[in-house]
Image (cartoon, rainbow, N blue to C red):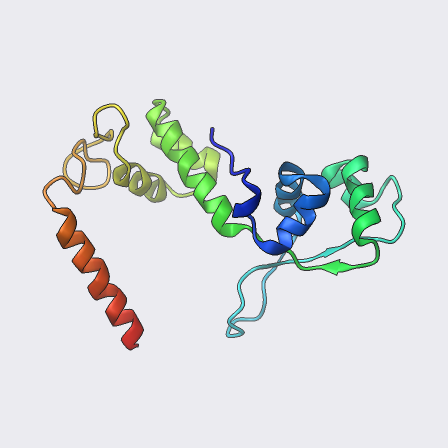
Length: 175
């Protein structure tokens, strides 16, 4: 499976952490941190917070999350700070969607993919339907919709898709 490991794809706050412990460890840490969901109506999405202690004990949760060496490097660089790194949701979503398509292309049943990836079957079907197979431009399934064996946009020309996107964008700016 493809892994999102490009340093420049990370949010700046996560780049700080990755500069100390590496991209893989930074993503591992962000993935293991608890999520804070603010009160509705605040306009803020899911937040991730991390307190980096001034001194490190072997039984500290940070050590359990990323190991002694990475945790001690964080303590040396950011000891005593409360960090609010980005949650990397968009990065995770891109990785998840690519993984789903790759598993489907490898022949794994869609219901199994949904279970393994922790998403609904509809999400898996929609992703598979939107993505042509690399070999023949077709995706597995039924007739004319999610799960169709036909590439969904084969009868639609690129200009009509583009003009539709511009109209949709213009409506969004008006609101």
